[in-house]
Length: 532
Image (tube, rainbow, N blue to C red; front, side, top):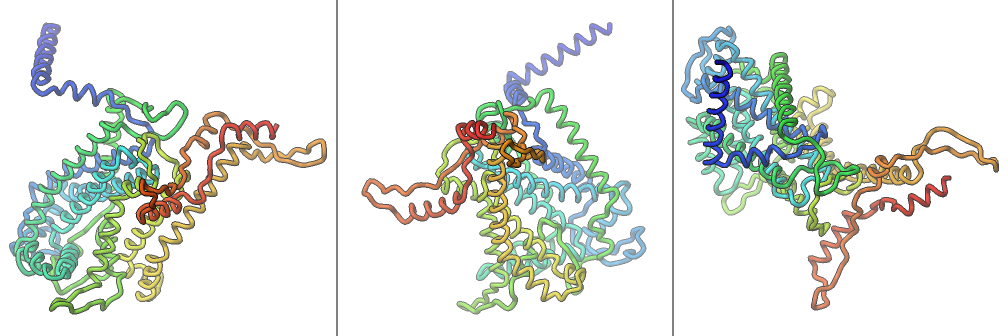
């Protein structure tokens, strides 16, 4: 009886699978995706952390949606937290307090949601840094870099809209800053503010509008771009770190089914567990300590979520009083300049793969990653960009830094302004020198081996240190990388060299100057003979 039941069940499953396959061709998709090989290096897990964090956000957000009221209707809270009992507030904040104090497990789920959102943005940022410093954005993955960048921006927007929903003092002040930025745009700023807030700030239904963006529009766009990103990954194959037997064509790792799927499932529960552990032990955004939004109080030491800090910091670091009257409008440069700087910075980040391809003239496909030291100018540019972003981010904490280090706020602002201008330059120079020094060290090791700290005396009385030889794998890692040369100026068919060609050649020289050429096999053999 048992055998017949199993057979019948198996037959039904097979028929159902065949029915779906004939009408959707899902079997072809599963077969192709199941054979996809993933590298096993730990740095590739950063993208998975982002994906799993987003899954946690969807699960916890679905729970919170059942209890949150996205309305600004005034009410008096009558919950169990005594300091807030009877305080007038919006329905949005009242429902958030109810989730925190009255719904069983509500506070834990709310904190899981918030911590997962922070981890989502952070892991995307770290994943993009890994892609940048290893050159994984090169052809044919330029568009996937842009997709990842858009995901990063969407994640920040998703986090900000969620952060603004409780209608407490912190979120209200954040929205007030957004209102000021929008209104600073000449000619159309006031109308844009009215359109966004539904009237004069704070409007009558800004929470409802943000709620619609937070649970519908932005998640749908994130899901769309995540699917697009994964599709590009499948089409282009994974990049991998160089090593013996690894070429541009084949990927060394584990297939999705069954090995990688099992590992990925276990890793998802690890990420989920770590988020729950953090949420259970560390309080985040305790709105009951701040109270409902009121335009009059502004709490000292307030900090936005870290991913928005760079925008807040840039507004603090711009010198005050930069305003002019043109054509009957007030041009608030202390708002417009930060917007322009941030906009140019983000555009350069998004367009960098295309800029580097133009500078290098490299049109080949790349599936092997670079060691950051072997691309010193790119690594230095990345360090400069991270420094620039970090100083802007630090600017959002200028008041807390001033009190912590017992310095005046003016001194701290001036120090950060100096760092914003000269910090990236210093970071670029130092990073490039370090990369070149590491390349020189690699070249010396490839030719002569490792220092053994063992000194011997030669028959002629000379003392020398014995070097340990490298095995083939270690030498391969040190010498097997592409050495690019600056582009050569060549006249066109009319015998002329255009200004664009001159600019491109100059930038190319800047990009590849001071490069260290890896030793050739002949040099290695000659070095071996000399050392012996």
